[in-house]
Length: 183
Image (cartoon, rainbow, N blue to C red; front, side):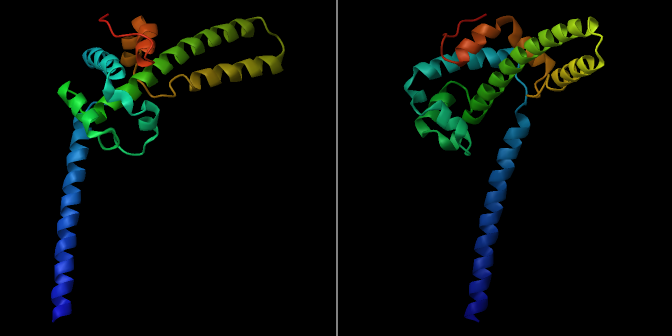
């Protein structure tokens, strides 16, 4: 009889723990669903301002590269003081560092797409003046490769257009070389 009671007690405890874990998972999933995957102008401006402050503050003393290498979410990997610092500025730590990584990807993509387009123009010009089939086939292969790799980061056209007018400034702010100022 004791064994049966013990088994039911263990099952009851495990069920409660599993239910609590599922509720936490659901809350995190709802938070993720409610957060857009893309970045708009207002969020970018707000992020860049806070990012500049973050890099200058004591809140950034935990290495940025350490955080990006972590398998934990930012809210779990960062010291609670840093999470609180971000919260005081209206940011969820997970969203803040998602925007950082996304914005860096958009900047990389914008640079890559620009250079890829220029490379394609050069290859097209070479193709027009070439008569050798082997060389023309190689040039066509290079052009195809450029177009296939054009959006390797999976960013939207709107995001590219968002950063393009101020891409150097945005890159420098992200790298901590420049302080934010509205543009």
